[in-house]
Amino acid sequence: MNLQPELQTALDQAQQPSIQPAPLHVPQPTPKPSAQTVLALKNLKMSFGAKEVLRGVDLEAGRGEIIGYIGPNGAGKSTTVKIMLGLIEGYSGTVEILGEDIRTSGVSYKRHIGYVPETADLYDNLTPREYLTFVGELYGMSFEDADRKAEALVTLFGIKDVYHSRMTSFSKGMRQKVLLIASILHDPDILFLDEPLSGLDANSVMVVKELLEALAKAGKTIFYSSHIMDVVEKISHRIVLLDGGHIVANGTFEDLKDLNHEGSLEAIFNQLTGFDTQSETARQILQVIRGVNRDE
Image 1 (cartoon, rainbow, N blue to C red):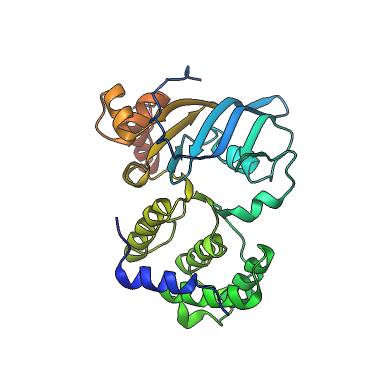
Image 2 (cartoon, rainbow, N blue to C red):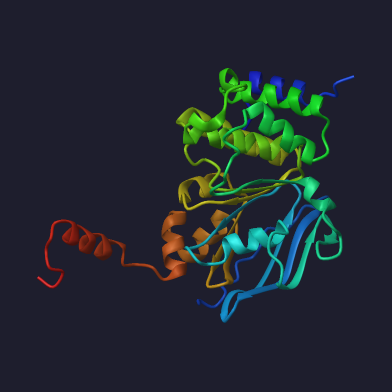
């Protein structure tokens, strides 16, 4: 995909200096000779008390890849991402980002990362300008550069008129746009996105999809987590399915479709996670709503 001409031009201008299933082994795509591994998990394990959340996750992501990271609730997706972000300690195994073990590299690697969490608390008493320049400065940008890029980006995302307004009255979609801008403002090498399209209108969704493809072509690595299977299916170069703390599938959508003989990612997801009771569960929920005894 290509960004709309006006979107590409504005972005270019903004970037100028200012003066318990058993694991199912699906063959991974062979990296191109110039491909660079920017993220590597080796035998990653994590427990909370007696609960083992990650049970030996091995995963690599290359430069310019969009990885669709999916799984049922409680599979360990958020835990994996939080470990890579340095938000959770106490794991075993190795996490390497940009060639360095994050246990020993300090926090400098975080300057190369952008993150959109599934739920985030914005500082409501701030304006987008105040919030975004604050975030930019945390990443080492000057106030002037952060302000210039932030204003260009809020304009492109259609919220320029509220750039100086307090965010207390912002809609979910407006807040999500601010979070998206905050994640890309400092031009990161790796993006971790958890339900990034939540609350966005249809036009904004199309812009973000094209932007992600453009960022990948520019060499950015994108770790995309969502429960909206059709979006993951369409934008991901590779899909990783986590279930019960294990990777049970890892390959392109075509790899997974050929191996599982299913036509959609949703059907593949249900097959690999062993879930096939959706129709019966929906019927029982309807019965409860209507006050009908489930045994009748």
